[in-house]
Image 1 (tube, rainbow, N blue to C red):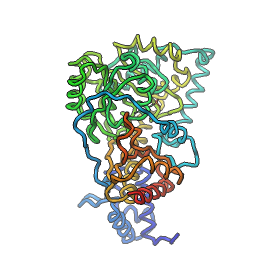
Image 2: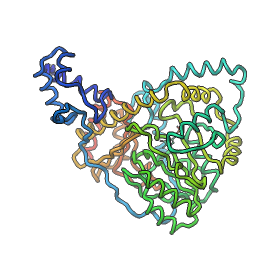
Image 3: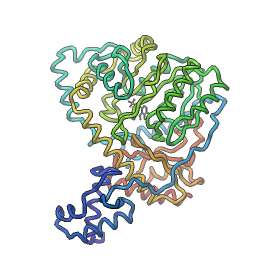
Length: 474
Ligand SMILES: Cc1ncc(COP(=O)(O)O)c(C=O)c1O
């Protein structure tokens, strides 16, 4: 490798601090004078380094204020296309590709851009393990006994408390703890639908949800969802008019997976009002809600629920530990039925992880942990966006997520993401191909979802390789 000049190595140091989240987009970086004295280099060298970073698009100078991290991404934004929902309910098809993607997520020889897993070094695992040991000592024999649905009381109290920050007042009695968010979703659907029923979902949507719907024998109406502002309430209204027998609707109101879209409060209110008018329950998946890039956490749609028709689901899988399998479902109206189903399916949620999470939420520094995670994810999404902008062909488009950690990328029209998936895998890279995010499995052929939770030089090289593969097939 060529050796760097002094100003290039100063630029490289600053670039790395941006990539690793020390300075998030919109933040001011050290002044020229300060960096020159901290690094023991001349002011001219720092000016040259900042000039290079400006040309590369990492930072921008603001008159009389200093240098700031730019949030510019180089690709145009993915645009909303369809306005009309599908009027005919569809069966859900889920291919083996989804199971392969999940198995691949444990394969250490692949660069993991496929599954949306948080990075191990960002999770408070040591702390949680200590809290679990402390809970085991405190509980004695009860630590190894079955918990009983609705689940661990201290955890349900913490969940009810945290929901106040999302604009929602519930009591701990309305909360049922589950094995992750996916079980919460399954219980919610099972409580309010029967096989053969039709439900409305966002398009695109999380493939694990499609899998669950398929196993429950449900049919779907896929509702157009805007890459920034989420499900179209007008399109849903139209879909309800055409399908008055619709039994439920599911949204990820805060940072849809894979779009990262965030419904404005007004749309959340309108959505709840529309569904209430037709007495259709809304299932809300808020798993990414705490991972906003701004300081203020967005409200949940349940905040606008006056008739107790919104069933809220979430878990700690994206911010504390996917392996603890601690999730929850919140609903006063359907609580009894959910408890009955939960008991029939798997008796209870594992005892000790619930106590450890409850203790962490109460006094383990959850807010400080979230502040760091939000900063790091914002920086990693930015780094990935820039890398895609740099290495992918110019006709590429991508989303501008304001939370979560996935990026939805639209490739030039001729690229087949299923073929790209195979080629990338052979090159040691996993990715999530677009068609698995639709029930029909034939939409989003030229889209991929990239996991941005991790960032490193190896990942940047993998994105460069992907860009080459995309160029070859476009
Ligand atoms: C939107 C969404 N909901 C639910 C889940 C499943 O969550 P859990 O691992 O808590 O079951 C995921 C996991 O990726 C997800 O992205």
